[in-house]
Image (tube, rainbow, N blue to C red; front, top):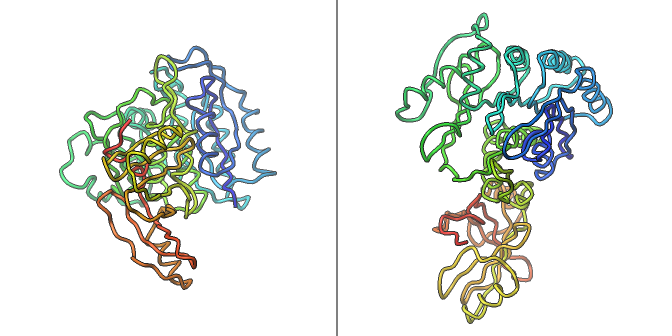
Length: 409
């Protein structure tokens, strides 16, 4: 069933963040996006020029229209518009269980745009308390986390222990430990889970950390992507998490896949505007989704240089070059095609969890030539043949299919 995602957020006229980024994310990940627009903004890559909140009654009417007819599998909350709207939305969400709807809710506490423009006043931020209490996960960046602590002043929930598990694997910096403690306090006070986004931290490596009332559940560390096209990263991440939660993934797995979507969309950014440009949601088509994604073919060749030149002339973009024996090309939409000197043709089907998929197929009676193995080119692969003898490769590669460390451009 198509996941139905209700997005409660503001509109971005420039299309980089807000409702526009949310709709693109949900759509590219196979969900159906519904919206309750809380504010209309005039903005572009340089900043926010004007903001007009949508009347609270109209926001609630949009929510009720979607829920009463189409139904909903997850909710994503972004820019909320006003304290009055925050409380009204909380009223609706608090009543959902009584209507038989126990949904994952992802709350991205939007306060400041990427450009630095303020999108939530002090009263609105203070009203975020009720939204945090309804949320499955709250996704602040570091400045938003500090603002939440300052405005909401959480007190421990009665009866909850204040136990603290280690906040990071290995030695944590003082600031990281402090932010982890802040997140744990918020999680304990409001009965939620907090994903601290590390993009505003220093250094070439960023870490996102998932924390509940007992401490850290999981963390993800990645090299920082050098790009000015970062407008809408928070909106995109939260909407992707909501879509994967609606599809039934556990929270850590939903976050891991959402992060991959964000990172690919950053790499695929079109480079628009003179400031913080939009991401490239439209280019992330075949990297995430249901199992067995058909996105890669390898063809054998006897004359490497001639084959390479042929596919270049055909118009495909070469992304890997191992001189004299192997090249990989990318087609519009994200599919890839490789040529390899002396190799047999093979069709590649990508899995998010290769080992689980192989186990499922073995239980169905399929026989593999070799079971999952990690390859030096950073793919994990298993191989089998169809009844006609054609080679099939099931694999998982993440970003390394299109963006291996040795990619050429």
